[in-house]
Length: 231
Image (cartoon, rainbow, N blue to C red; front, side):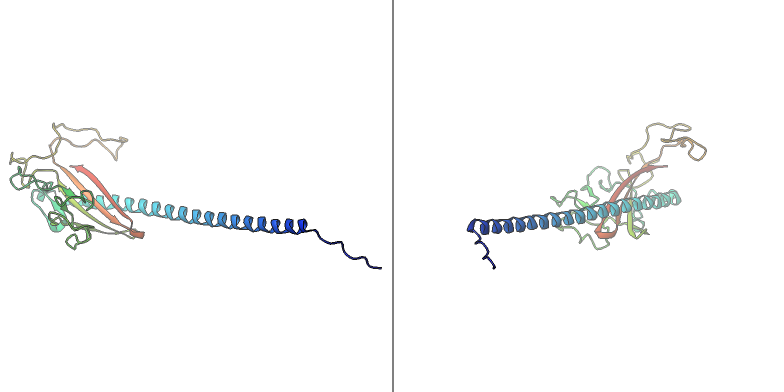
């Protein structure tokens, strides 16, 4: 003889419904946590990639600066005049030809003085500085030289002699240049001293040169570097 199943009370049915609700809530929470973890990993990978590209562009800028320094060495006898086709200027370009009237400052990156039109821009792209965000500038006559493609990065540079105007500063005393104050037969070099890195020859006072380099790499990575050298 089969006995009928005992009736299920309404309280037990409600308990089963609450358990299902908690299970659904736990599933939603786990889904959200998984989504957040995936997005965090993706963001971290993107940041690491951008940092890597930035470091690669900066390393390429060092090689471009070496090319500019080599150009200065090869053309050491003709550095008293501008050679804009080679990205070289015999003055800081922030003074007029008389060395007294101040020109607008040079905005190396195109965004340092973005709130004012009183600036000079460097024509990094050869398009009369059309790549600037606001288009306001006081001239775009500063040309650059190509350093070629370095490890997949496009590099360009411009060189300024740190003098008030072009000309031979050793004979023209109206030309003011950034230079060492005294001379000596030799002066120390920073870093380790060995047969490959001997003391510098400081027997003559020479001008300083400012080398600006822009490197463009992957993911629109752009790196600007500045190097001050003298010979």
